[in-house]
Image (cartoon, rainbow, N blue to C red; front, side):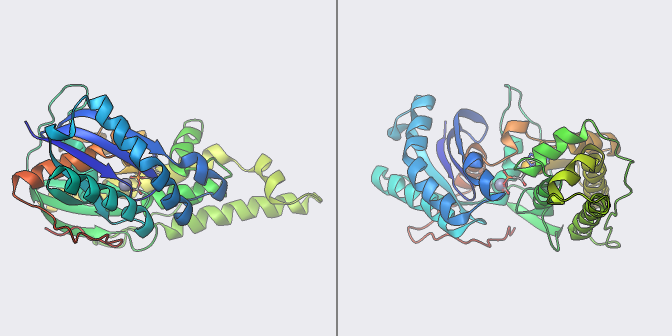
Length: 350
Ligand code: KG4
Ligand code: ZN
């Protein structure tokens, strides 16, 4: 039995978890900073790192308590060392080093994108996921949109990624344009339930045969529609600030639904085509946007291959996925040195 303590502080969640053999979650504590960053409409890096400093010790103590294990029971300490915000990553890496050094445990630096992928190995509600290589991974989060072919544990080939905004970033920016709550992803999903996805014919950037993505044109198209509604409202002679009263006219739910399907269409079709071309056995979804029910549903319906996705609560940032990924690396003999440093733009290499 291999118990690993995982630590995650790459963005705005302070998280720690204890996972057994890369699959069974003993504890998974996430202290979200969403309420703190809401007023800025996005993550404020300095505020995030300061909040991590305040939360990291209580979060780790809570996860150890909840798991009911002692430091002696652990085999390793794993921590996200990139990609992410430098100041945020530093808090997790230093905490992990302190614990590993103090307890005489090996330290494993983990790539955040790899961790998202390994959320698919975590046993949710008791059932064992059966993953057959090669798998095509679609990693869609606030910072990443990547198509990755995974041929075995730790072996990755990057097929493409976003040229501008990440999928989650596009959700967040469009959420803001529509005057929805932060973060935009869940808010757009909720609004879209009541909207007509065919109301607006928004652009899909197919970019030919490539496996790259671009969401900035889609975001601009939404912006243009919002501006048209604002202009129509001010033409009516409103003396108030245009943006606020215009929200009464703006068909927010239809725009949310039309935007959501435009993103999902491109993600699903490119993942399907890549899976076919590279003879993948399965498609794995990962990252915060994989929590989106339309994406999960459309991917499963439109693909002939089995589609796996983590339970919704494990799609967004957490440390169970870090401890999960670390188990497979630990088994393969991978260890980090005490000179492990944060790498904010770390890439996933095979
Ligand atoms: O993986 P994650 O927690 O953090 C990063 O590694 O970036 O992803 C957060 C992103 C945010 O952009 C958020 O808006 C998006 O995931 N997201 C969603 C949903 N839940 C979270 N996007 C669409 N639909 C959702 N239900
Ligand atoms: Zn993430």
